[in-house]
Image 1 (cartoon, rainbow, N blue to C red):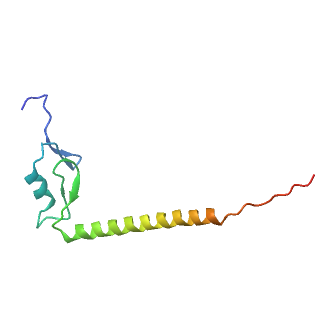
Image 2 (cartoon, rainbow, N blue to C red; image 1 turned 90 degrees about the vertical axis):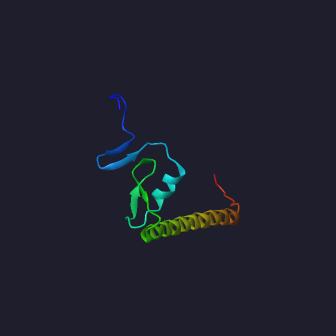
Image 3 (cartoon, rainbow, N blue to C red; image 1 turned 120 degrees about the horizontal axis):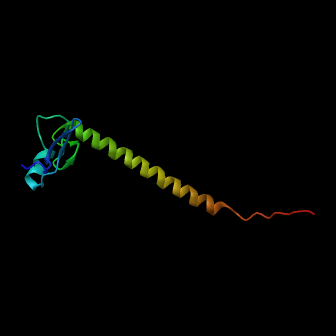
Length: 98
């Protein structure tokens, strides 16, 4: 390796990075690692990702999906309420005396 070439894998301040060209086998095997913790090194890029072989990862995904669904439902209800309020508004006659 020449001095001007940068390493494609390593760590920066304890955070792993990997910029090697990914292949399908490496991608799939990095997301399914039985016996490892909930977080594993990303197959491409910087940081960590969820290990789908860990039940804890599925709990995190379920909680995130529930929160997303709840937020989505709340925003839909607010949209419906604002439409209902607009329909209920009737013109108001204002009389100004001189």
